[in-house]
Amino acid sequence: MEDIKKIIGINLRFIRYQSGLSQEKFYSQFNMNPKYLASIERGEINMSVEYLYELSKAMKTTICNLVTYDNKKLISKKRIDERN
Image (cartoon, rainbow, N blue to C red; front, side, top):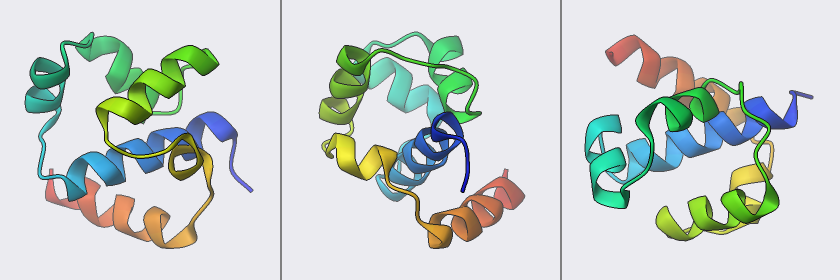
């Protein structure tokens, strides 16, 4: 099992990618700090429940979708990383 911060980061990146949003578009569309969100995607940030809730609303998903471990998303993350 992965660290919860890494799970959130993988899920955030996966959902953002599925939405067709680049990091830059996501940051500007939702008026969020790019460095902070990049750190979340890398699994480096231990965020508050309030911020997690706001992030899930911005991504039009649920907190559950952000914190649930899914091995398929790990595979997809590797493919997403290879494209960049």
